[in-house]
Length: 147
Image (cartoon, rainbow, N blue to C red; front, side, top):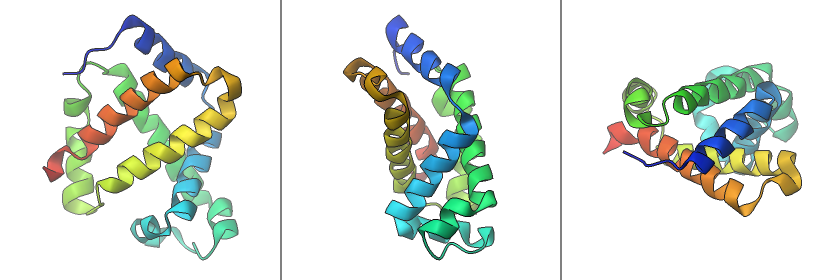
């Protein structure tokens, strides 16, 4: 179990309180698919992903990005038990979807870049420490069924 300080909890809650889920979700997932094009293989049913412009304009990608961010709400609400909270989702991604678990880290990195760009100077070192810790626990939980 991960130990969270009151400060870390407050920082994570503050980030989520100001998130525009549609904007940040869309930008994070599109960035991941463009920067790491091999991740596109999991989105074949989402239509044309031929280039950056089509990925950015794809409403299915935007909707899935929003869904991913709303999925992070579950971790926020269950910070003391993220691994068990994501057990079923981990199983889905490993057994049914066969997603390479490293892709969770790639998406987390893209999410961090997008949030840092949005927050600007407010994305302090302390904010990044708490945010990276939170995402590391989420990524580990999602990859749990692979171990």
